[in-house]
Length: 292
Length: 292
Image (cartoon, each protein chain N blue to C red):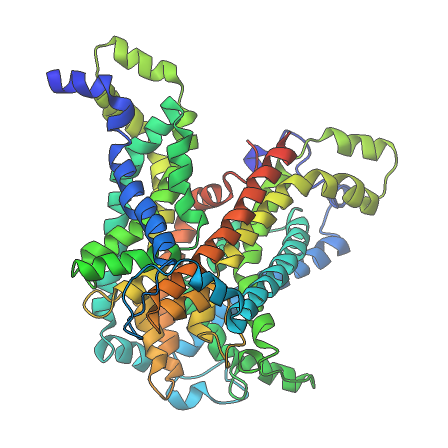
C-alpha cells in the first residue's frame, strides 16, 4: 500500500522512466558520441586511434568529391521520387474517391507495397529489371520500345531506384489523400453546384485547394523518409554501378562498415543528420502554418 | 475512411453526381472501373510476379516469353528451407520482432500515458526523433558500444536496437489514443479508491485494445522488415530474414527461383497481417497527417 502511494505521488516520472532511460542510453548517448567521434581520426582500417583532430574531417569532407556527389544524388533521388509520388498519389486518390464495386479492398491493396519488406521487394524488382531475362525489358521489346539498362546503367540507376520507391510509397499519398477527401466539408460543393460549375472547375477550384494542406503534410513526410532511403538502394545496387547510386546514407554506411573509418563516417553522419533534421524542422513549421 | 465523412450523398462530389441517377452502370462507370482495376493491378503486379516465379523451375524461370501456365514446383521452397536455413532465420526474425514489440509496449504504454496525461511533450518529441533522424546515426555508436561489450550478434543487442523502431510507433499511436480517453472515467475509478497504477491497469488498458493492436502491429512489421540494424549487428547466429535474403545474392550465380521463394516467405506474414488488420493500420499510418 505504501509502495502504491509512492507510485501515485510520483507517477509522472515513474511511468516514463524506463522510456527516458532508453532515450538517454540508446539515443542521446549515440548522438553525442557521434559528434565526438566526428572530431577524431579514428579508423580501424588505417589503424588510427580515436584521437582529437578538431575539424579536420569536416574540412576533408567538403573537398571530398564522392561525398558531394552523394549529397547531390540524394536530392535528385528524393525530389524525383517525391514529385512523382505526390502527383500520382493525388490523381489515384481522386480516381478512387468515387463509388465502384469492390471499393473496400482498395485499402488492403494499397497497404501491401508499404508494408512489404523492402529488401524482399528489392529482390523482386532486381529480377524484373534484369536487362536480358527480366520481364520489364521483355515487355518493352515486344512493344518495340527501347530497353534501358535500369539499375545497371550509370544514368538510369537513380530513376530506376526512384521507380521502386514510387511503387512502394505512392500508396501512402493515396491513403492520406483519401482520408483528406473523406473529411472535406460539403458546403463548398453545394455552392459550386448552385453556381453551375463544371466537374473540372470543381476539381481545380474546390477539391484540390481544400486538399492542399493534407497533401503538403503527406509530401513532407515522404520527403523526410525518401532522404533516408537505404534498404532498396543497398540491396539492389550497393551504391553502384561505380558510385552512381551512392546516396548520403549509403556513403556514410560504407565509410563506417566497409572501411571502418569511424571518425570520418561520423562527420559525414553529422552533416546528413543536420540535413534531415533541418528538413524535419521545416516540416513542423509548415505544419503549424497550414493548420492555422 | 468513409465513416469520417460528414453526412452527404454517398457518391463523390467530384465526378459521381449524375452517375447514380441512371439505373444500370453507365459508360462512365465502366470506364472508371476499368481505370481503377488497371491502377490496382499495377500495384499488385510485382507481388503476383514474385509469387508466380517462386513456383517455377530453374529452366522455366528464365524462359522468354515468360510462361503464365506451367507445372508448379515446390523445389525453390525446399531449397530455401533445406539448404539455406530459412527456418532458423524465420525463428530469429520472430524472436527479435516479437521481443522488441513486447519491450516497446512495456516501455511505451506507461510513457505514452504519462505523456498524454501530464503533457510531457519534450519526452514525446525525443522518442519520435528516433523515427525522424537516420537510423545510421544510432547504428555506428551502438555498433562500437556493442562490439566493446561483446554483444554483437546477440538477441539482446538486436532487440535493444530494434526498440528504436518499435518504441516510436507505439508512442506515436498511443499518445493521441490516451489523450482521447475522458479523464472523468479515471476519476470515477479513483473515487472508488483505486490507485493510479490500478486505474491504468484495470480501466485504461482494457479499453485501449484497438490502439495497442495498431501500435503493436506497426511496430512488429517495421521491426520484421528492418534491414540496416540487422545487417550490421546480426552477423551469424541472430541473422534475420532480410539479411538472409540479401546474403542470398552475394553468392555468384543468382538462383532467381530461390530468391523469389525467399521473398514470398519474408513478405507473406506481414502482408497477411496487414490485410487482416488493415482498418487499424491505415489509421495508424495516416494518423497525424490528417486533422481529426
